[in-house]
Image 1 (cartoon, one colour):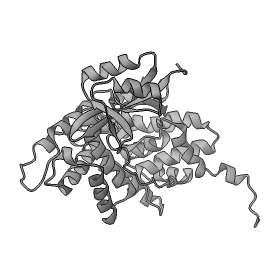
Image 2 (cartoon, one colour):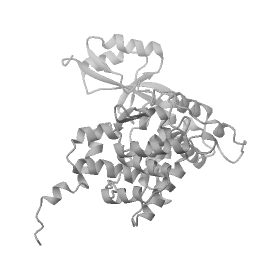
Image 3 (cartoon, rainbow, N blue to C red):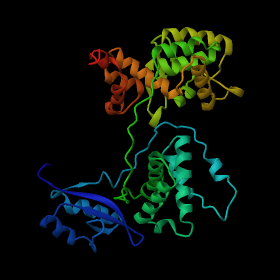
Length: 375
């Protein structure tokens, strides 16, 4: 297929009408074939040809260029499900809000698409509130009329408000989700500039400090929470979702189901923590979730954060310690002990080793082999 020419299909919105964009390098054969398509036009703004977006026209494009050019439709049909598992979502509170004349709610289609793609509850909340903040910045303009310049002005407003780069990127994601996913127009906004993500080093504590946190925690449930976060490298939400069957003492692994991005994996189970878990089970007798709150419901994320921070305070640790700091420390200590980066990647559930490589910047193993010039 290497000898074939290339055409990339893109979604366009021209005068509020959906169009099929045809992006290609200058070529007389392709240009001649495009002229044979129904009413082709050229967009100077997007630097590509376009025709009306209909199923008939889409089929015609593939038939016209068959054997002449490879039609790249990966952008056009991009519509993957984020989480393949049936995660419970709670979107009713968005729908049950009292009607308001002064506040513009996100369209029902927005909520429906979030549900169909099975985003997590926290992501749904972030997207809905971020998108509503955007559409309420333009209360009198129809959603379909808003364009790239309107988005840029809104992002400029967020910057002037002192919003972080992370918040601005969330706003962009929420806005693009409506136009590109809900309306089925991937890559409608081609030139929206994203702020560069700040590269911050992960915060870690020493192994001795972790052990001190566990040692000074007398409550068996709290000991197990701190111990599992560290020894298995779990995220807070992953710890919350653990059920009794996820602790596999025969294989000495912890099964993580529906981790970030809906991915599942297994991680290490510490022999020390297994002993603590058995003591905890006899004392608390959890019925479904490994850690349960009132009425046997899932233990709250806020309670987990509180447990970790109080333990760090008791251990005399000056820096702020969160559940994610324990996860960072788990990865860093494994790297320092000589564990292959690819194994750490799998234990953490990272898609790429590039994400895991950040721990090489805080691991001190290499530094210990370098003689300081002052010494």
